[in-house]
Amino acid sequence: MTQFQGTQISPETIRAAVDGDAAAHEFIYRHCSRPVYSLIRRLIPNAATADDIFQDVFVEVLRSIGSYTGEGAFAGWVRTIAVNKCLMHLRSPWHRSLFWIDADASEDDANSFVPIDPAPRPDAQAAAADLERALATLPALSRTVVLLHDVEGYKHHEIARMLGRSTGFSKSQLARAHMRLRGLLDPGLPKSQDGSLQCTPLSTSC
Image (cartoon, rainbow, N blue to C red):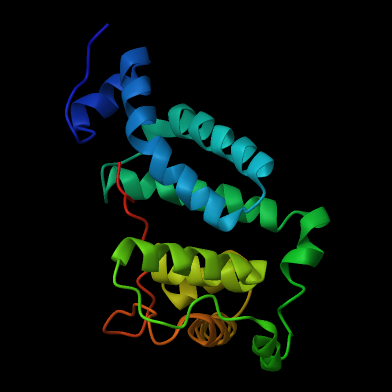
């Protein structure tokens, strides 16, 4: 059994995993588990459900790793599987009514959110923690659009296809979510040059 080392998942490691090498499987799991679980918990706040999806993701990753073509980062391929598993859960019949409950909500609902800490934070890590707490207050649909767009980098037409909605719907949900988050966190809300939120996890690669 080969021992795998290093900070990146190499093509050799992936080929070994395809061949069923248990050490390669363990190496991939150790490198990807933390960012993948962080992503899942952002989309699925319930810990027990997130744990189940996390296990399903790695079963799928190791079962279908032979289908990874090498186009694009391996971490991105893994995260796509995680996102799809989360969206499958959110679109499930028993969860769907809760997931879409905020789809037609009035933007006046933003008034019901209580600011967490409007003062600028001197500590970037503390500011990131405030942003995480603010994200957790968003309804499921709004939070999902923010995470897919601002964190995972999906375009609006891709998000629309994932959610079975229009591109305009994705844009409006993102604008509404940004408005709510700014109401919670301004003036300390970190933003990118394009206006997206800087809410990328500390580690998103594997």
